Length: 286
Image (cartoon, rainbow, N blue to C red; front, top):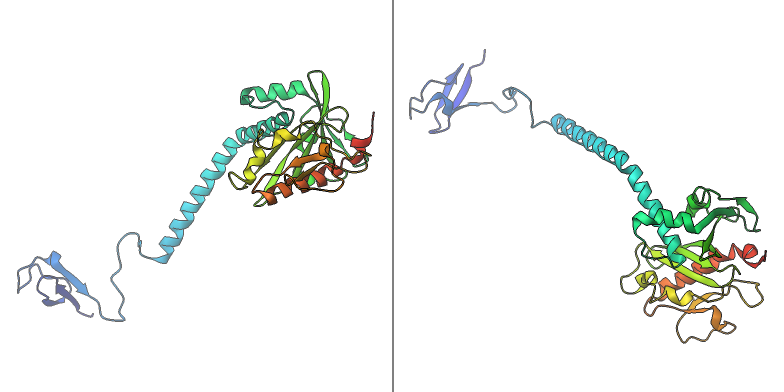
């Protein structure tokens, strides 16, 4: 059996034997000050207990931490899901109400106000046919996601404000940096704008983000005409202030935001594209 070697950490004395000496014969250091010397290529002394220096320990530890964190996140998400969904519904309803100039309503009152004002959340097609009646007010057109809006699936909110019928149409588009969306409310004639609401996800503060401001942008839409004089196309336009546009009537014109050309161009394109899908409905007088 090979003799082991132990080195004194105090004076460097080398001892050969099965165990370290009780005392170093040179400096009298106790056995605790000796460490075993392993020859190059020979097996290192086996550490007692869990080896925390190995790759296996690191991998197992990381996997356990990831699993625990994932479980906790999934649990929290599941617990908060009902409240999160409720907040999304309230936010959407408050945006629809804002287009009807019912703004700054407390969250606790949004549901009741929406129920009082909205008569139906219909789904119609491009030919003006009613696909879903929307009698439940938030089970048909309300649940249609933006990506699913098409010529055969067009949400339409039939509302009543102060005894007058209003129609609210959702619009979605692209701004400078990301999505923009909103709602356009029309009087019973389906042509005169009663109110609008626009918002965004990432437009520039103080510039494109001003599309969310009532006094600085949205208010000017009230009373404007949506369709051309002959009703053949959506004429409502957002153009640079003072710019002459041949054939554009004053009652179809709204001013773009200064310094936010691309964002307001996005609003213009959004209105044209989305509202044109409703042309048959808008030009059919009941």
